[in-house]
Length: 299
Image (cartoon, rainbow, N blue to C red; front, side, top):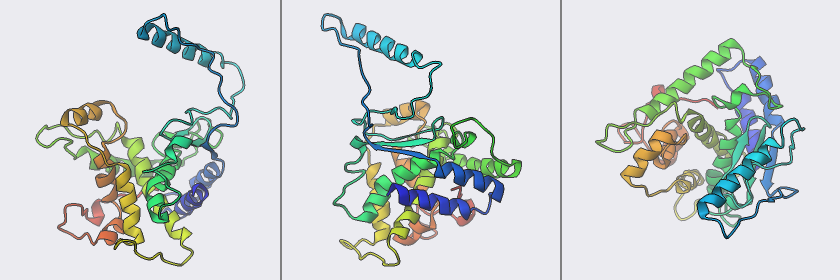
């Protein structure tokens, strides 16, 4: 699936109308040089810190933090260990590191609702496929795009392409800015605080959908339980972000989280895709519909 996503993103980059050939070449080179880490590291990190049962929770926590800082400082002046992981295998998460140009998917995320080896391919592409595409797109979001294939902060964008990217990013930010996170609260989502994550979600859906289509090899899957493959893809994506949160929690997260609220990661993002409208027969007048002139397509 990861390699299918890489191929798909490469196809998308090649077909971008807003990006010139010079910048495309750098983007393709960066994509080709992604380091992929899946499951668990080849060597385990040594945690020499030991919890002292005689100390309080606070004192142990402070000692653990001191150990962590000292461990990081010990790396100063030494060659970068490219085999080191930024997450443990037990972490249900994934990441892209711009300074090493790597994407990582710990073992713990390779389980439902993100991934199920016994599930339908369309559902998996809508779930873990979008997560993979999300992390890949981070390499080309508002922050990741500032780094080259070797993890160095380098401007590889032409002025025209930089301007075009910023304009598209502003459209996406405005889409989230207009969302009132709790009806009647007057508090709106912060489209600039969450811009990088929103770009990654947007790109993840786009490239994962193409990767799913590529995987069919011209043979369209049959419906399952009355749902088409296209519908199952979007249902898989929505299922990943199903969440129950209080209004207080939504307001709290809006102030500090660089990720958009779960419901907006689905509903705002998908309103940019004609493929979503076609899958469910969404038309003008429906709540999820967004006119084509107001949609944005980045990656």
